[in-house]
Length: 171
Length: 83
Image 1 (cartoon, rainbow over the protein chains, first blue to last red):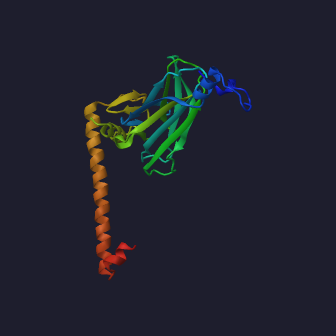
Image 2: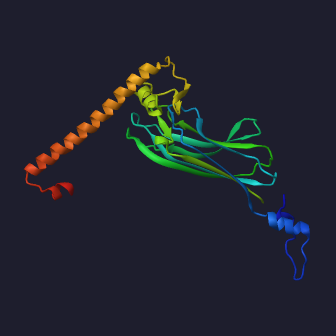
Image 3: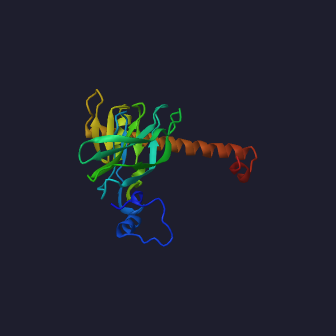
């Protein structure tokens, strides 16, 4: 992939760029591909173990130098009543070529916590910039769990759509 | 059974931990107790819905009663609405 890092530090007046340099400029900092996925499948959990929210998307970078910008949005989450301590934890995880999922970032912890038994509705949105250094298929997904294994925490409440966007950015 | 029926039914039955419901099915069950039958969950969900409806109806009735009592004290509708 073209890269601005291979360009000279400066150009002088009258310089004629080579084809390689022009290609580097052409390929620099562009959005090379966009992948989106959405889900309306509701999920509820009363365990601390992280489980799938069903929001997942896969992208295969065209270059090892590319970065992947991940947007994940869960606009309709809640914690149920019945327990004062329950709250949601949402993580972004990634699999590289089927090798297994690893956590990349915590998008929210203690979400919806009120220290009361009130029901609480809220949204969770997260960003992550990844440097995968890979051209294998990368699968990103969000997982959620209950902070205290009590009552329930919920995603896609009322089947409100959650969205994930993956962008491959050239560097 | 719907997602909400499963979730609410399990909580109505007292299962406050050890389960995950994804869409319209129980996808994780780690509670030490035996997983209840669909019929038991369905019955509990109906009870949950009835309890919620009764609570809401009681609140509406209490508000109406309060309005009536405030009106009897001489408050206008605008004054009651401003409370």
